[in-house]
Length: 356
Image 1 (cartoon, rainbow, N blue to C red):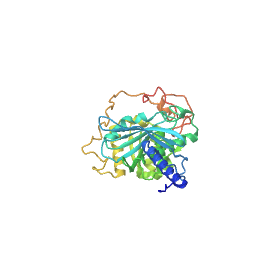
Image 2 (tube, rainbow, N blue to C red):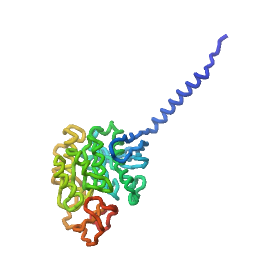
Image 3 (tube, helix red, strand yellow):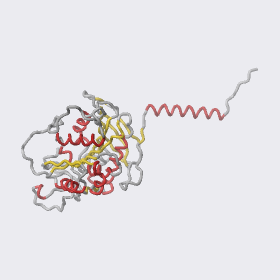
Image 4 (cartoon, helix red, strand yellow):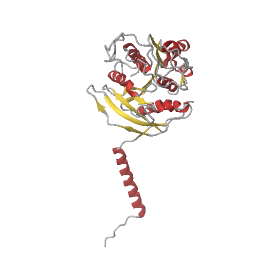
C-alpha cells in the first residue's frame, strides 16, 4: 500500500511565503517605484530631502528626437514637479537642474531646455515649492516664512538626487545646476555641499529671502559662473564683489537691466555657459554632450525666437528685488535696499517690460 506524504505545516508556510514574495516582486516590476535618497546631516543648510517615491510619466519623443518625461518627487514632505528633457544623442548625457525665479515656474526654461538638448545636454526644470504645479503653487510662495524659503534649497538638492536615479541615461558624474535670481542663490548655497557640481548663477544677489551667497561663493571659486547686467543693481553689486573676492570664477557682464531668465535668449551668454560647463565636465568632442564641431558662433543667437527690437525699454522694476530708486523712475521711498534682500521681494509689477 502506497503511503501518501502529507506536507508539514512548516512546509506549507514556507511555500506560501515564497509564492507571496514572487507575486509581490512581479507586481512591483509591473509598477516601477524609485526611492529618492534622503538628505544627510552636516552641511549646515536647511534639513531636507525626506525620502519619497519618484513618480514618472511615459517618455515622449518629438520630431527632432528630444525626449521628454514629467517627474514628481518629494522634498521635505512637499511634492515637487518638473520636466526632464534628454537629447537625441547617445546616453548617458551630462545633465543640469534648472531653477526658476520667484513667482515664475519651469516654463521659463522651455527654450533653453531645447537648446541644451540640441547640444547633447539633458536638463531637469523644476517648479519650486509654492510655485507652478508643485505643492502650494502657483502663488503659495507669497505667504512663505523664512524657514519655508530655506526649503527651496532642499528642492534643488532633491532634484539632483532624482537625476542620480537615471545612471543609464544621465551621466551622474557630470551634473550641474543653473539658477536664476532666487534660484541662483539656492544653487550657490547648495554648491558648497555638492562639491563636484559646476554652478551657473544668473542675477544672483548677496542675500535673498535669507539665502546668502558671499560666503558660499568664496568656496566655489572655479566651479561658479556668475552673470549679470549692469543695470540690475543687486546682481551687478554681487558680481563686482565676486570679481575682486574670487577672480578664479567665470563672469559674464553686459549692459542692460534684464534680470534672471529675462537675460535669455542671448547667443553670447548661452555659448559661454555651454563652454563653462563642458570645461568643468572635461568633455571631449566625442563625449555625449561634448562640443559640436562647427557649432553656432558665439555672436549669434542660439535660439529661434531671438528678438531684434531696438526700441529703448522703460526703466525696469525687478520682479524679485525691490526697485532701486535710480532705476525705477519712482521717487516714492519704499524703504528697500539694493542688496538683493528686500523685505518683500516678491511680486512682479505689471509695468515691467520684462514680465510675460
